[in-house]
Image (cartoon, rainbow, N blue to C red):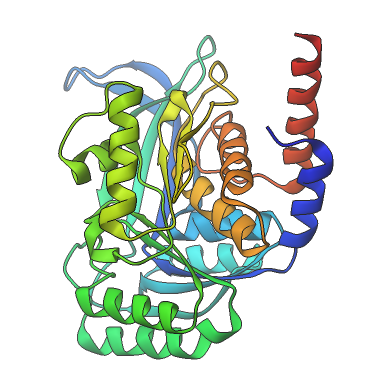
Length: 339
């Protein structure tokens, strides 16, 4: 567990660290309504609309978490040439995420995930359905060219490259290959958070799969400490990675490093979980920024786990700032001291 002094020192070093974020920008739309009655037309709820909010999701959320911790994030990706895309870019620019290298693609909509939630005077909001608007086709070659040129121009000035792959057609084989080659050639920290084939990013330094993704990659279920250790060590070897973080929800994070024993970092918040939307992006963004600032893998993993424990307390996609992390560590330190 990190102490408040160490966390403050890490946060100070994280201030201004430059991270290039390559990945799928997603607009997370949250539509909240209050339950009025059951419809006579069909056995469904009728909601009275209360609010609609749009927040950055996917790679955009990872970038938002980086700037919330006072890092410098530059976004590479695509949005549609539509109102949602413009709104998402305006939001990102308002929180100091650089978007000059985001390409407008008129052939597809901005990827949007609309979560419809219902509430009443007696109950907190509960998500009842999600509607996704997206195209998974690979991006056009000319957009690949634009993004490759952007990586070549912007990567030399960054401490790290975070790749956030939601399998929405952005990370084509060619774009993946070029990004990895450039990152390795320039000796940049490469962190990969992908819902796709982990093997396609072999050679990156750090991977952050969740447990189902890790199980899919190794081909067997993780049911106990022995199978967890076996999976982590297998991933380290086959991906030629320096570290693997398997995120396990209420079971915390399992960290694997070369020539070190597995470290299990417990979940710091199990009881006040309201919404897990975007928690994986928070882990990826916080982890990358901490590593870029010189944190050890264990320090970065603990900090990322702590950040995720804060955002799941809130409804919708969220971020955490340094003051909140320090306060959370101080509270945990007091709790530990009284046990």
